[in-house]
Image (cartoon, rainbow, N blue to C red; front, side, top):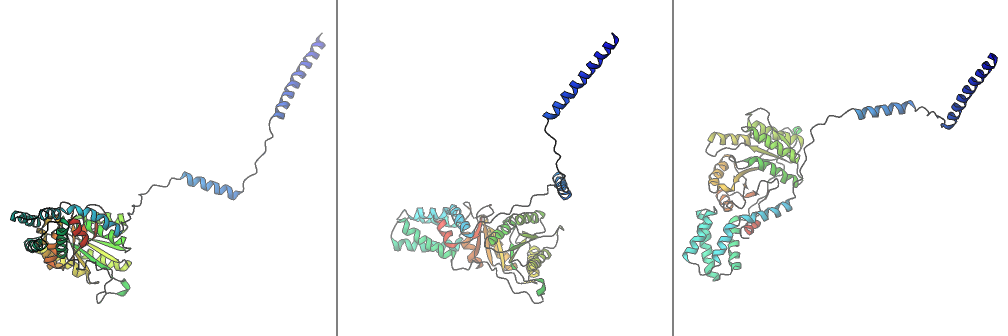
Length: 387
């Protein structure tokens, strides 16, 4: 019986082994054949590794470059400012309202005179204008508002004087004797002066935008070294419009030295115009006024200064006249920039300052916006007053 058990055991083992072999063979037949991908060329492998490394390396985020603002065009700027200037037409409308009554009493004429005086026309100008209005009212013998407006417009326009040359002197000057031609061609120079609080630094930035809108290249000089914030403010304007600013990092540096460096850098880089900001100073401080004259003299070692613009706050009224007279004596003013001439200002200062100094209002500012500065337009100004 034992041989029989041995045979059966062998047969059982063979059956188990055979079943396992059959199962493995069937599984291999069901699986797809494994195709080995060809090896990539070495150059491609290296390129892929380099690209992966670039993606893994984070580039440090630096400060974003300042966004340059595009200045508004001159025609568009003037059209918008004329509309805003109409807000300053209170005295014109008040006078027209009285003149339109007809058969004016002495009280009516006194009301007109008071309105003119409060508009900062001054005693002499007001007296002259009143005499002409009285005469024309008798000649016309009418209460027609349109006829009276035409008379008043003609008188005001004559006072504002549209014949005055209000253009800025921006042609390149001839260099001063001794200037090295290898150091470049001097730029047209604009020196900005005035008392504290009139908006000189802001006006410098706005003027740079006006010049850029006329396709001129500009450089600014921060010669207001007494007020640290002034250099920072001017630098901010430069970044906004893409204009380089020459300044001193030394507190209390010599303003004349900074102005000279700005004029020299303008010549070296070949820009068209250099605009120099100066420290605000009271007109009764003789030492500071002498220093202002020094700034101009030092700049003129390179080339003559074509424009000296006095920045006046229109809201100061007749007080601005004394400022204008002293500054004119110190540096020879060539033009006026009248700021803050909005609905609360007194437009008569335009007439007064021109009559007293014999220099024109060349630019007018009507607000805090970057483009709220434009060339002064006599006819647009008078029409706005009477609108």
